Image (cartoon, rainbow, N blue to C red; front, side, top):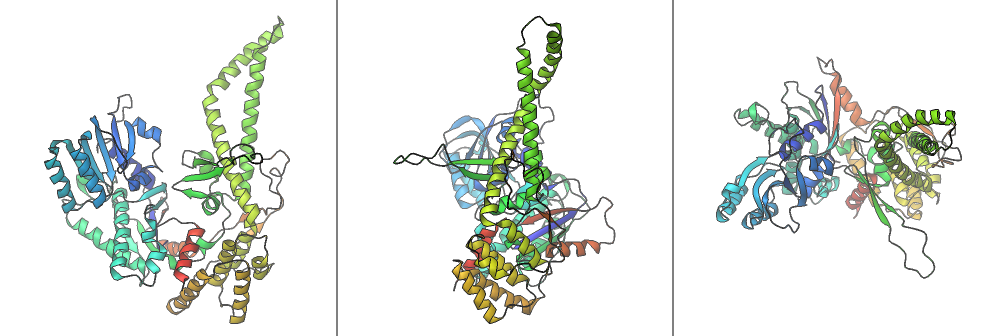
Length: 590
């Protein structure tokens, strides 16, 4: 939340491609993967820690790992049996604990050979610890390669990355802004962020032009990152950006613009209720590292006196391979519901056609017409059978999105999220309100206490003039009656008082929404999604503070690229509004 980055580059290499190439190279013993897929891969085991697991899982499926010869993938600190005739590829952070466990593996002679890959650069002293352990265990020849991979960031999409998922609270908004933070703690947080950003640019093979505001955490990160990049470029023989030392990224003299922004530049957007498919999933469901985890009831309701059955947990991966997801993740939710229903209808029509052809194949009798029909339909059935795997995959994706969209719809209806979204959009765009804020806060059927607090904080942050003390007391009473925790408001009051002295408030431009008529197709009786009572809101173009900053910086370029700009977004921690509210609450507690 603290440091956001936006990179503009004309390079065709996306973050996802660059990271994918680096990982596949590592899994092929740090050699470029062979183009000839007919050759049998060398079978090996992959040993990673939680950090390594988070980096690999959004990009490579189990099938892709198997295709690259990974027969087994295990956590470093799990109980592992010796497999003495197989090479092992390690992909771990160079922490004290991990180094100790690697040394233990060498002593126990677990594998035939060891390829040690460190997510961040390993220090000289820790490298010496491994060398001493290898010498003591008589396993020096078995440690085949040691590599710094510079992959200490997580790529979620081709244009989005985050710095970490494990221990993210250590570099969170709360960690940086708490009142009792020591200088040494702040230095450690900044070093962690800089290390990840440095790894990102090494993988991309690009030396950026850095821009940031003065006098906050973003400037501290920018200064440290600039120093680290300069130190690396100074030594031409060992530079990670030139020569043969490049492992993944392709160095380009076209330098991208790298914009570092402190979270305080825009506090309202993370609290804002959303209306697009991906953002809604992230807001209301358990969605981390491109994976949704949902609980589903098993079987019918238990009879009286019977032990209730446990709920099953369903996991769904939302990846780039899912065409429906790629097309609709940024669409307004009503459009998504309609598209899922259309996909389902199309699939059912195809399924019915296969069933009809099967029944025709069972025709009896000597009728010539029937026999000629049979020969025509044999070709159709053959075609239908050959497309069966594709049809089954389509069915799996339809079921996935039906289940996920239904769960999202339940939240929209039970919490009236469409009402919140519309109201907040009007607040942020300074439009006229058709209902008072107190009415929504006081409505017992409209949302959870957290929803009400999010709405009020957006009002408080975006208001040009703060409410009078008497009005504020009235709002506080309504919030307390709605069982809201006022700690986040205490912090935002302090923050707003400080920012008023330090800088001008953020301007959210003329964004907004336009209500449309009732649905046509989605409202039909056969639909999976009963959208009755839910508003059909159409989004307008947004001009959020970060977007404005980036646009202004890009327009100052004297030679804009003919290929246009490609924006990559990164953040130190990808959190949803609930997590942000908790962090504000911790900061606001007296």
